[in-house]
Structure formats: structure tokens, C-alpha cells
Image (tube, rainbow, N blue to C red; front, side, top):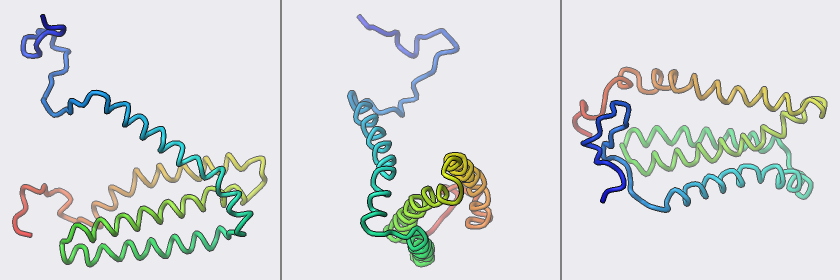
Length: 163
């Protein structure tokens, strides 16, 4: 006796058909939820660690920002040899360096914006500044596709031939 009717025999037009692309891995959803829990914990650790590290090592926000930005430039420049050699590991390395430095600069920018005005309005400045992150994630894919890919932005991989 089946607990659920066969998808092929359903007559309800509002049911979602199974296209066979899902992964049947019982229990894996708990693992993935655990990963997201860890991501949240790691993200919020900055609030605890940064003030103590600043106190212990007299960290300069501006030095951190400059180091992050300079290393981001290195990551961006690595895309040139990666594209010339069409080597995936170089692309992956460039992405890793770029993403790591973006994180460094973000870690520096959040406390820095809170220092640029009265303490009682720090949360407002931080929220307003972080809104530009969302704006960037909306605009940059459009601009990036046009600038970086040019006419290739509309070409799919199956239309290409050769290396």
C-alpha cells in the first residue's frame, strides 16, 4: 500500500511534478541547517573578537582596509592569467583571494562606520551603509556582465566550440 499516490496518476493541476532532479538524502537537511547555524555563528563572532583584538594588538582599521583592498587588486589581476590560460585552478585561486579580501574589508568597514559619528546613531549609519551592499549586488551583475563578458553574456556554453 502506497502512502502517496503516484505522481503520474495525479489529476490535480496544481500539484508540482517531480522532475527527478532532487537528491534523496534523508537526514542531510539537518546537516545543511547545521551549516547555516555555523555560518550565522561565525558571522557574529566579529562582534566579540574584533574589539578584543583591537585592544590587544592596537589594530588600525585603515591599515586593515588598505591591506584588504591591495590584496583584492591582486585577486582581480589573477583573472588575467586565468583567462589567458583557461585554467580553472587559477580562476578558483583568484576567486578565493578576492572573496577573502572582501571579507576582510567588510570586517573593517562595519566597526569603522560606527566610529564615524555619535555612538547613539552608530546602528543607523551601519544599516544605511549596509544598504549599499544590496544595491551593489543588484547593479554589479548587470554592469559586470556587460563590461566583463560583453557580447558573450548572451551566449550559452553549448553554443561555443573549442577551448
